[in-house]
Every structure is written in C-alpha cells, then in structure tokens.
Image 1 (spheres, rainbow, N blue to C red):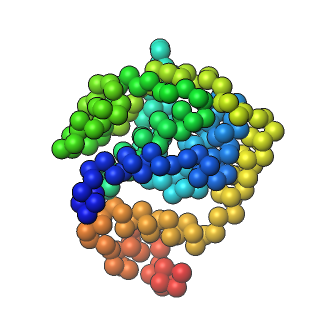
Image 2: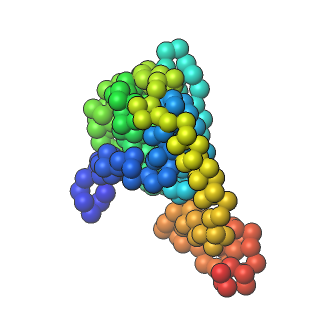
Image 3: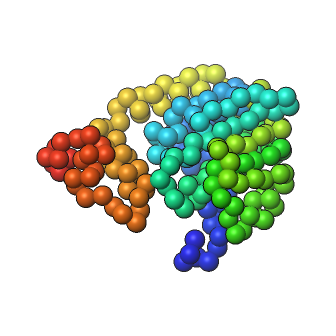
Length: 212
C-alpha cells in the first residue's frame, strides 16, 4: 500500500479474482445447486486449500437476506484490514459471477478502526458502514441463499466436492507445516520469531522443526 500509493490496492486485488482462478474449489462453487451450498463449500475448504486467514466464520438467515460473519484473527495488525478488504470485494464479485445477480448490501461493520480512506468503503458498498465493531459482518439483502447457481450440476458438484476432500486428506504434512509457519510469521511481521519461539508456538521439538 505504501509503495504503490494506492490505499485501495487490496480491493483491486479482490476485484481481479475470477472464480476459475480458484481451481477445483471454484468449480465446486460453480456446480453447486444454490448459493447456500456454494457458500458452505467455501467455508469448508477455502482456508485449507487456499490458505486464507480471513474467511467466512458463519452465516445466518435474516429477514430479508442473510448476515455473514468473517474470521478476524488477532495479531495481524494492518494485514487484517488488507485481507478483509480483499476478501469482501472478492466475495461480492463471486456472488455476482455465480448467480448472475449483483448483490445488494444492507450494512457492513468492521473489526478494526476506520482507515483514512473510509469513503472508498462507502462508495463500494453503498450502504451504512461502521468500524471498531466486535466482528466483521455484512448483511446481504439479495440474492437470497436459495438463489440458484446458473451452472449448477449435481453430478459435477459431487465430483468436485470429493476431489476437495481428497486434496485435504492427501495434503502433505510438510505443506501444513509451511502454512502454520506462514500464519505465525504474518501474526508478527515486524518481529519474526527465532527457532526457539517458533518451536514453542507450534508445540514442536526444536530438532524436528529444524529438520523439516
């Protein structure tokens, strides 16, 4: 953000994503029968397969629409805002891509202080926006969770969902360790842990961590 001079660069990254870029997870979302089924797939697999730290924690139906709560890990500093902006813009875009309906957002609250460029949030979401909340939540008025996916296919969905489960089952242990280390480093980017502190945080033997 600092080097580019573009405070909205995270939003621009989110806007650049296409569902086909998400691989097998994207195809599972495209072949789901409804938006609710597609969201459920994202919740189940995105953090493991894509390595996202900020993702959907839960959703619940409201009248009208539904409310989505995002995971907001502690200790991320400015990265929390960056990943949240990218995730929300990406989410709005993906909903439009798979349903053919431009989402209408009712309100949004963010679990971090208001940034200097908060007007960009209001321009994008076109609804009441608040900061410093206990959790990041956004209310989607439409499309509803039962909205059909334009390319839904039960047969293809079953195939993609099985493949997602297989990817998670066969994911090498070393890959999982890299993911855990990445999360540890992102939690304190200005104070990267040495081997001893990393060992303690990951609850591993120092010799095993060094060897792997």
